[in-house]
Image 1: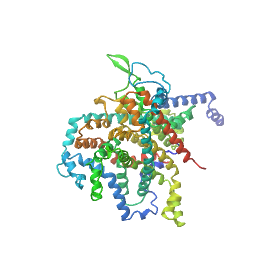
Image 2: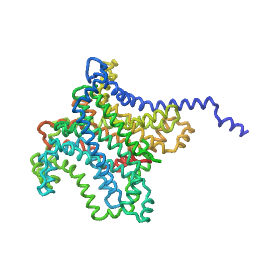
Image 3: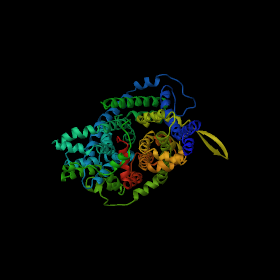
Length: 309
Length: 312
């Protein structure tokens, strides 16, 4: 008797099961809907619009709708010396910042990954510029980079008046290096923390084993730490590169692209065209080039750091 | 992006201090301390200089540059620069705008993104794989690639207002609070962080609650979210930093002074003849809220950054 009743209760009729499944799917779609709708409206549509608008003559505010003009924007863009200059500046910034910032961040992470007194305070201080907005940092360093600013005074002091600084941001040959230096100062703590998290996933026994085998500090780094950081490494490279290629706020605040366009970048140029001059179509064409650049860089890095097993 | 995963371990490990202090004591000598301290000065002195200069009149700032007095609050110390900031710009308004916009973005973002991740990790439905793959694919696209098309697009979007008791459709989102908030609520990275974290919470908990007759929303609210605290902290901190530091977007999309956030307010001081004292005071003013949060929740801050890059 008891067996019979349990048989009746446990396996539910098929129809009811299907109904529960369908209810579950309906509930799931309802829960995911707000995010999906927002991502479609504010991500997918603008990305697709970027492709479409770049083939038109759309302006930010215009009584007429956009008209199809074919590849005119791209012909104009590729004939524009400012575009090539901006592209070169962007790549220059990336080529210097990516290796320097990731390397410096790794050194900091190794220094911070030690069990000594007060290490938390050091870590917090190295991280301070990261929580300070890039806008604030840009203002502060604009002040410090002046001809009679703090940087030049400190250079004089530590070199016993041998080094006379320059007007860093108003000199076409020093403006970009000055911005590079400041950008690394601001963001390096971010990547230090990510390296640190990677370092702490490496099992301690590996170091003990290496030590038993008589490995030197360098060998331990080369054969234990470095291979253990493979996943972290590719993440750091991709994020630093994309952030570097997106360079904008520093330029807008510190130099406005000058002097002599020596600090104009792709994103800066697209904002100047799309917002300053209201030429949405032309700005979309520049953004598209930027998009292709980012995509190419991440695909190349994905390929270089791919799983080899 | 198989390399980004937030796990409970990732957050905990990065936030707590070295669990494995191997044979690093070689660095822990006096030389190690001196090296670390020099680096600490390198990062801290410019910020200290900003704070200290905000308290000095311009001529004294320049007079002090040549000596260590540049980093010390000595001489004619006063809050005059701050007074001038409030006389020049509606700084309270900017601060209130930024706080409001950031808070709403964080609250709505936590809700919308965690709900999506909940449905993606714990419920069975057709199309789940496609939605997840689409969200992950958007992770590498920086905002700057579609900011200009987005600007054109939001200028066309409709909005329902009530005028004289009548509903009325208006078009164009430029120059509003909503244009600063709504586009940034759904965030692929936040969904991904929640997704990785929620995957580590055992599904048996939901099943038990299901058998007790709990609805899906009830499971989300009473079973899963209370266990997802670290992921919520991470998402909240990253969303807040992002919202507070917005510069490019409000610069383009908001023209009215009364709607502008703190970062855009900087422009008011960058006129031809810059008064550096008030400039430093304003910079200090808009840094302090974030700095206060950072110093109070230091571990959560650093843990949240770390968890964004750890392979679990």
